Length: 225
Image 1: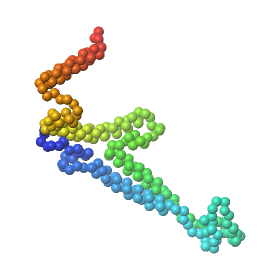
Image 2 (image 1 turned 90 degrees about the vertical axis):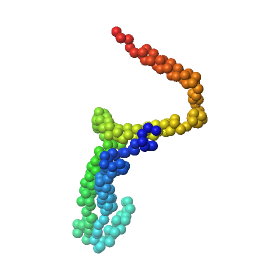
Image 3 (image 1 turned 135 degrees about the vertical axis):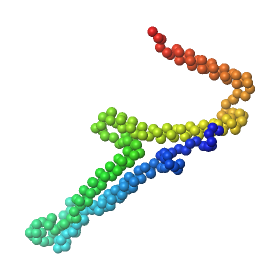
């Protein structure tokens, strides 16, 4: 077989000139992924804390019934005069403020989107390739994004194609050098040329086909004026 090793050159997603050990793509954006996990965990914790909770005046026992009341349900109040004099129902209920936690969640969500954008830039996956786009953008802008993402991934695609090609090439070399013609004919169902006459006939057919292709190409060329 061609070459020293009985296998193709290893396939590397991330090339490293100092080591032959494979490096996964995740290693390139591991820090950003960890940060994304931390931000998401904080968002979940704050979201769980966003609950309508509060305290009420224990003297107004009807308030507890009001919280559990359904739609269009009225709760009778015994001491209405005292409630009116104290400023109404609002003066007897105090809700826990949640505005600060809600604002923090908004900031964390913006930070999470920024972290995701960094990951997409590192991996080379544009928003077009992810299926996310802005309807207000022009067609030219979307085409540029698509081409940018394709160029970033084209190198890895070419390397994978090279790896598959080398594997098939090694297999063909093994078949050509180690397999008997009878075995190849049984595997493929094709009749191979074994005698000199059959080989000469195949060679003549190949030459005739090549001449036919050349004549067709010359016929398709425009006349020179």
